[in-house]
Length: 188
Image (cartoon, rainbow, N blue to C red; front, side):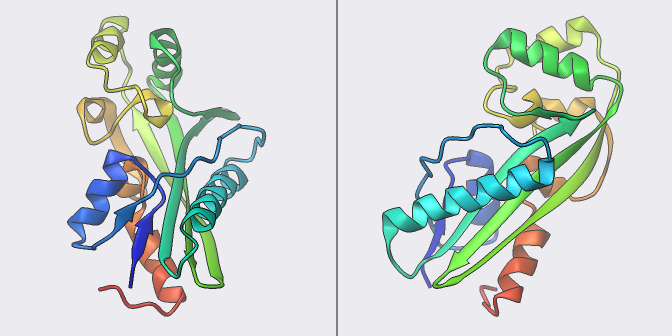
């Protein structure tokens, strides 16, 4: 069975490679515009639209996997920082408090489509301005929802999590496995 990952995210690619799956990467051209305040509906909608965009591009019988991750705190959706100042604001906002990481996952195969999500609570340590500025200088915050990477230097700031670690990385593997099983597909 042909598998397509509808993402160019190095983290999602690495996670699927670690499962020894053979897959092609076909990034979606779907333009994300945050126009919903409900984080669950937002990530599910983005994941679905990314999968649909790729399905229309490839027009074949491949199993398509798409995902979208956001950070959410106090009613605010945090996507990827646009610049250093944006990253600084996000990290100060997350410092010393709990936030939520949501990932929507969409799997399309033939005429079937299942969209679901995962939520993980992340507890950040109190960060000094010096720590935040150092972290921004590593360039790691860029291209990551909430301006941090738990699997990199950003993990130094995480006190604890409640939920799926891989969700915070960008692809909740247990949720993906559940969706594929619900479709009756045996990849493993």
